[in-house]
Length: 83
Length: 220
Image (cartoon, rainbow over all chains, first blue to last red; front, side, top):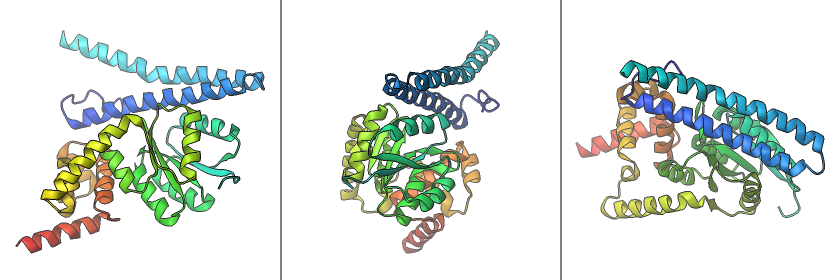
């Protein structure tokens, strides 16, 4: 995906890839939200299970942050090129 | 269906979404997840094997559109209900989903518990539209009704881009060739083709090509 991103910022392919990227982030946030909802529902009955799920959610946020970090780096480089 | 356990199948290429939905649904009384898939092809195969009551389907899948999968599954299993679950509201996709036989169209901003209630409602035979997309759908219906009164051609329900792609299909172009010609990705073209077939009530692109050929012949 990164190879395509930024290759051409004026055509539909770029927009398409952007949509796909943002969609991926949104899907990840939705999934983690569902997992948090599940943790809340089992917190009283099975705190150990909730704890285990919460650890998975923390890793999930790390996984989601990674492409965002790459995107910020890419945009930063792009801005420098324009200066 | 009142006392029976609702058999749910999840179709989403994001594992984190499937895991979250599965954990929540399996915890709910009267509901169990019986199958999962991450692509259109897998979803058709798994649905035939597990025969779910309700399929929760993502719109964008790596090998095509959820609408295409919805149509295929419903033609094999007419009693199965499909809920389209997507990350954003797109009026073309909403209309195509409805025409493709989906019972509900919800955005991925819905709480898991509300989604479970939606599954129960759909299993009872109800239809459901996310409030965020209802207004857009009504506008599309009005536009379509206005279009039908002046132009009865099935093409009239297609958007400008869809009409353009329909003619490229009729020229015998592949999705890849169409994508290159109109600067879109293969995946987006696949989604467009699926929407076009849904709106024209066709199953294969060859039918669409034949339709255009017939129209041109009549016009000549």
